[in-house]
Image 1 (tube, helix red, strand yellow):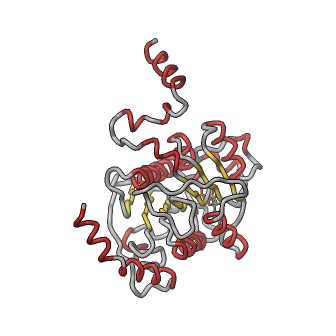
Image 2: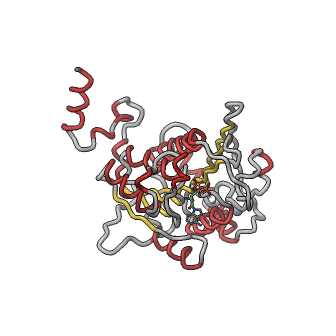
Image 3: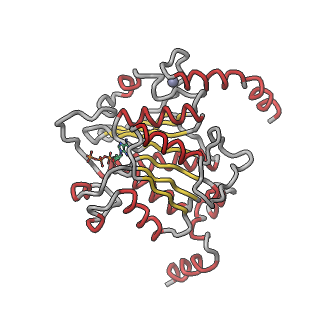
Length: 306
Ligand code: ATP
Ligand code: ZN
């Protein structure tokens, strides 16, 4: 009765109103800004596809999707993909479903392996160059800072291997592009998300001992011949933590976690902050650290003025 009438009215009154839940609850005044943000998601697997759906339902402006793989029946123990998608590329299947859920989201999909030479170039190009005839929106004043020449506000890493993470790390360090990393352990009962701001926080190459510190030892490397466990619950949790942190980062509300772990067995959510390593192997990381240090007086002046 009443609830149905209300939701019908909400859908009719304004094309965006169905997306305005946080605004109506008074959590964020600027919720409609979500439409001006572009997020790139690398990996359309158990975490990335769910993160893409969440951002689509939140009314994100634009999504760039990357994956080289196709949907298999074995993926049905995860969320998002359905048996009718089997055989399609993950990017095409995702773009099709997401466009049906919210036709207002601009979708660009890239079926490529970002770790190859061509794939890496294409990845960086897609982050910086818009397709022909495409009107890129300028970043919002006072909003999150994009990388140099980047048309993307945030890159989400939802891949399942070390090499792909190092590739995203390289591209984002070169551009000075903010990104978030995510992972689920091979035993499927723990995961983490991490915010990486080149020059300001540790990059993915800065702190190898993270693997030891977090206790998530196998999260980065896929071992040959080991069949990784998979739980839609853990992957859904990690996708939720990742997108929640992305919303807070983009819309500037609440506390944005630098690192948030999830241990499903103990229901333990460790947090930590990691400073960059001045001796990081990655030259682009060291260059961003030098730039960040040089801007310290400006930041202090701005903090005093505020
Ligand atoms: P499984 O390995 O168990 O079959 P999966 O490959 O689907 O699972 P997920 O953790 O669910 O793994 O998702 C990770 C996703 O990241 C996959 O869809 C995979 O194709 C994608 N991916 C990994 N490396 C790259 C890469 N170098 N370039 C593009 N996509 C990648
Ligand atoms: Zn580094």
